Image (cartoon, rainbow, N blue to C red; front, side, top):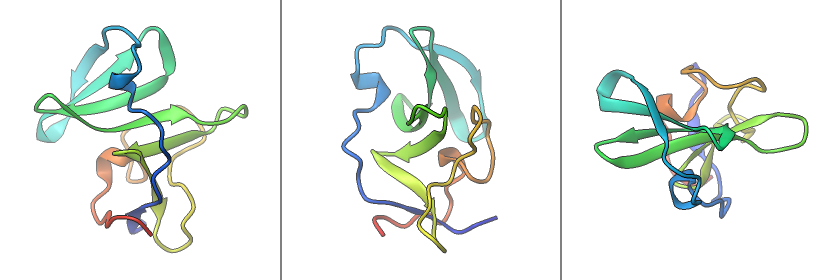
Length: 107
């Protein structure tokens, strides 16, 4: 598993602050994390813990590539600074925001 860091802030607004409507809380993950998805925005998913959004993924370009963000910072590989999320719809994996152990702030 790569060591992960948080890149420079993107300025992107968290999904819960965008007026997307009520999120579906599809299922719970370990550690009290709840998966959020918006019917009005299928390209966005988020995680919530104790009522606070802790991270999200969304499509970030016209090619359908995804990015994982924590507090507006992209999750990146510490070795090369490249964003760390799969190019297909994300699932819980070592390279997405909700498994960002080792994340250490701006690079």
